[in-house]
Length: 345
View 1: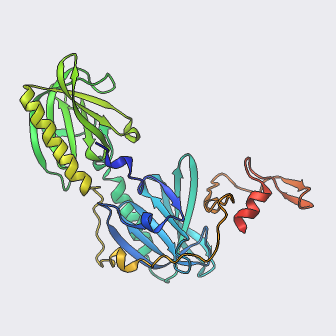
View 2 (view 1 turned 135 degrees about the vertical axis):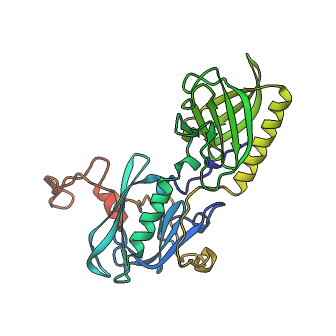
View 3 (view 1 turned 45 degrees about the horizontal axis):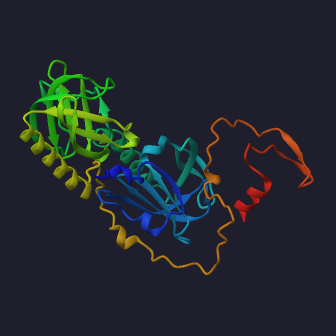
């Protein structure tokens, strides 16, 4: 069985110039807001575009050249602020600054609402990102969290308990809580186990993070083994349920709920606009094949313009460039003049 998160990238990646297929909403992804006139002030200053706010990411797409676009996952966002920016369409104006980190690289995005006097760009993005941040229990594997109150599972919004199984032994490694007798809660979004003697010894495993659910033989006999995704730590969690018939029933139920969840995931980001946006299908522009031939060996970096240099307070030291015959700012390691010219052209 393959976990949902193994193919889920929308909230955990920053991508540039994505294909129309990657632009489409995945199962469980919902379009929350759509702003028609937003400028990508950082990388495409002067270019009017459409900003889509979903429950997993922000998508910006140029209206004049749809293949020029961005997809920014909320899990990559470090900070969102409002600051003054210099827009070619609006001049000096208040803009939305989004600082992100993806694969150890920091990117900065600046979006300006071309419609004057409208705070919607700020309110939508900030509110939806906050809803994402406060609903991580739906998506992340959690150890020793505040899950249990008075021996009962603290339910998340949209969560329903399907089964409660008593007398479940945790056989996992010392990373969690070895050899504890506890209780299983099986819900529509996750599996939760806690030790009966100490509620703080617990684990919450969202279906989103489950790679496989199997019955395996162990030194304690047959056991339920749950393997989590690599992104959640790659845990292998073992649970002993007696008798065997009860174990088989539990595995069948969990597999069934995991399958239902995979078809229509609940990501837990609950936010609604008063004014509903149009369906994405109505907003999608048909992709037209450009009448140009792209050389596959030519290396261009659409993302170079978005590099965030937070620590830069002043220009770097000047050095003489024999290639240009003049003084230039010293290039960062890994950059060449030829490479920068290729980006510009």
